[in-house]
Length: 358
Image 1 (cartoon, one colour):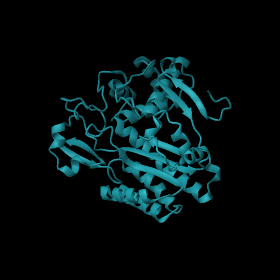
Image 2 (image 1 turned 180 degrees about the vertical axis):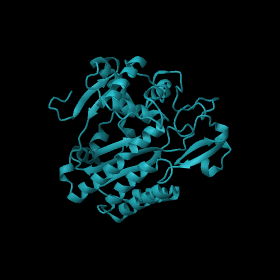
Image 3 (image 1 turned 90 degrees about the vertical axis):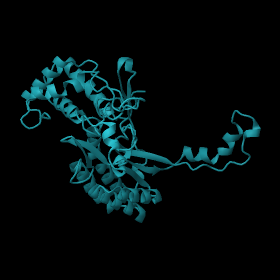
């Protein structure tokens, strides 16, 4: 049911025709107050380290996704005096862009266009925001009109780059995928011609310069360097609050990875992460490979969670035998002895990039 007390918990909003597209829920992290000051400080710095990566996820989603987001946010934040229906149309599309990290559905990877916002409406809203001093995402020397022209097809044309990740048999899955892992014009043949160490790289983008495919590594000083520097700043701050030697080594290896781009450092990070049994846990990096039609390049994601009191989940695990005896199949297929399964309850503090909000 919808939250009535204004605390932002529970059902907040439904989007789409008859509210069937998206359900927006506000969730809490029960048990946070029971953490020690050190654990709370660790969670805070890991939380701050998760936030800059959300910008990376937008930029990876499509080459125009981040500018679309910035344009819509600038309009909404300077919408005082804008006609209410137009303001609502801008905000409706902005919510979809926020939730999906761009103009492609998170699950189907197909493009969506604004439900109620028109080209004329966006032009009017942009002019209103510009008069109010809104910081539009303009390139050097670009006008507001040129900005709208540059983003027009990405926003309004359903037939322009309709698929973010295309895996259709017989297609050039690189040339027909709009995900921003390579420049327009890069083909499957271009990537097949690269050395194996580049074809299977987790943290790379492929630019096309003077007809050549040039790998660009995700690292400080490289592509997404500004965001990774901000991520690393807060990871370094988290080190002082790490709960164990393994967690400390995990963070140190991750910092080395973002500094150098060397995937061996990321592998060391993951080994230490797996060995760590800290109460406050986190993910941070280029991990899931679903947006790459080849399943190689990782999309940024981050989350922070902490192990909370088990309560009901512990009781269920302790009585696993009770449930086994009452399963709706023949006794011949039931186990006589059932060990309590490992059951842990985690409260999530934040999820960004590919981990959230979807």
